[in-house]
Amino acid sequence: MSSANQNPQGKAPRPDEMSAEVVEFINAIDEFKRRNMLAHLPLERVLDVVHELGYRCTEKKRPAEIAKVTGALDLYKREHKRLFPNWSEVFEVLQGLGYQRR
Figure (cartoon, rainbow, N blue to C red):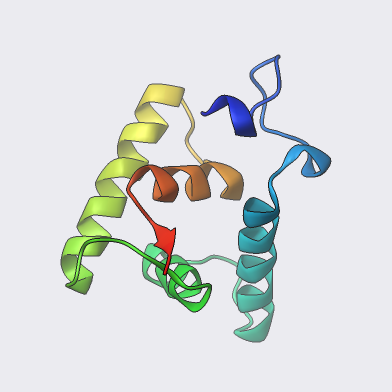
């Protein structure tokens, strides 16, 4: 996890320590889940939210994009011993893959 999104004890940041982008992402995820009455979001839906926020990556084809993100999240989970990363960690992984607002 980057030092910008992590407090000194190595724990996930508190909401008041998160960047505005991370808070916006988490709020958009929550709103998408409410709007669509979903308890769980598959990766394809998470990417829909990311795209709604204006973030794009270099991958042009959806299957390639999903495979790239899935691999990066799996690696993150193994390296950080996290079975279920929180939304701020997911957003960090996406930014690490080059997702930027365009």
